[in-house]
Image (cartoon, rainbow, N blue to C red; front, side, top):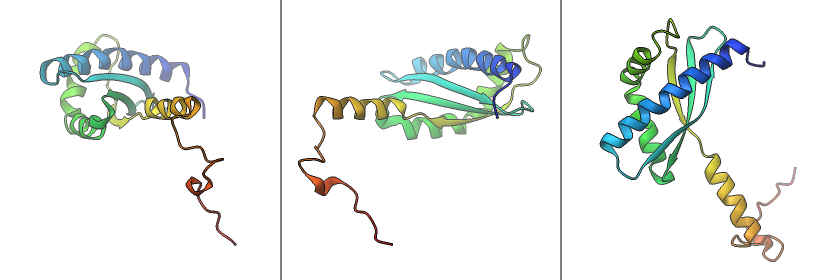
Length: 131
């Protein structure tokens, strides 16, 4: 089902303000870590929100997403303070790691020829199961 305009607008407001909240938290405690909010989805009843985070360096992604998820109540409170004139209620937020940058990097490596060539070495391909 496609998102309504209201869902898109609320997701945009949350995304914009959530970037500020997370960037300020990252500047305080974590040097050398870049956190960006790639997408926010809000349910039709506006009670739940899915937040997709892109974190650089990617080795710390799972650790940071778990830490952010454990602090979601304080993040939601800070977000409510920033959006109190725009939103009546801030949805419950669930955070996910976005691995699209890793996927793009793997495609680039394959196109440059840095990957193992399956034509020259067919052993790297998964085996088909006989049915």
